[in-house]
Image 1 (cartoon, helix red, strand yellow):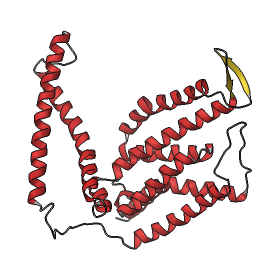
Image 2 (spheres, helix red, strand yellow):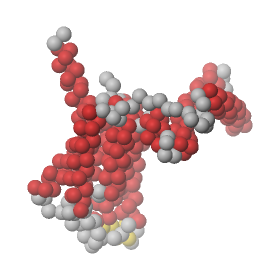
Image 3 (cartoon, rainbow, N blue to C red):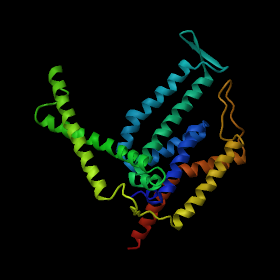
Image 4 (cartoon, rainbow, N blue to C red):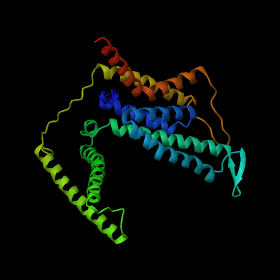
Length: 295
């Protein structure tokens, strides 16, 4: 089923991803980090399915573990020494901080992955085309070109394998020769693609004075309601940061903020914000199934 959150206005999508990315990077509270990580993982799996699971298990999880283990090896701050490694103290504070850093890294990567799915080049140009037209166009073209280039490399490599010219087999000299051939083909493809893009831009009047622009995006009542709701959540979360509810002191000793009613409300607001795209999608699915049951 189509993602519902992606159908909202681009400014809503951009505001959401900017907020969750910034909050994930600056709030090192383990509860908030876990909420961000689980919600980002859930939404990414909803968007990409098995591909998201493979990416998370093969790349993201080992990287998070590696980051968590590296920090206490090089960071010896803290007062609670639990052992020594090669004569260097291993502190509880550094281990917890490393675990928090690993969670933060995983959450940020997952939300960036969701961002790449939802924020298409059309949305990016719509938001920044008039502010920084040249830069927005270049960024959009680069973000679009890289996956196309990788797809084309795979196509050419598979074609070479069918001809018995596998770049991963044979002597080193033959493998280098096949790699050079693939590079030559890809260079030609990139140049031809650039010429086609330039011709397409010229035919659409790019760079001409008085050129008009058309967009399908409209900021309707649905977007206004969600925008007000998001701003309310932002206010609660930022208020929690000001009052110290979202922060944890790791050094020289670990200190968590006291659990209060206000803190629980702030955690709940952060939970709703992070899970909001998934909640909207599940709500739409339930509504669709209800309508189908009446047929």
